[in-house]
Image (cartoon, rainbow, N blue to C red; front, side, top):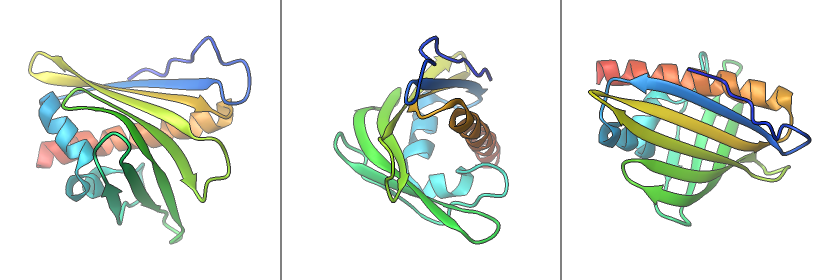
Length: 154
């Protein structure tokens, strides 16, 4: 996994994050597990964060909401709209915390076959600042850890 910072990290809303993880599953299986709420609630979130609910309308213009429940019981929703849906290789969607207090960020997820495995590439763009990017990096790393573990046991 790598954390690549874009050369456009020049000001608010221009900070980007790129994460990569090779997972032993097909692109089709990863796309399914990423986009179906019955699977997503089982692996989403960094350590100690649960996903008690997820709603996904998987179509261009469709919306999603993902609940993140912290150990103290606090519930935070991530929501957005799908801009591109290309099964099983690519998703692009907006990303914001509810209630929305800032402009939406954008997430691209690519599932790139690599022999018997698939490289998951997450590009998270339009992040407000480096501190937020670093929090996103920890969250995404936890999600990718959970995804790999879930698929090993699924």
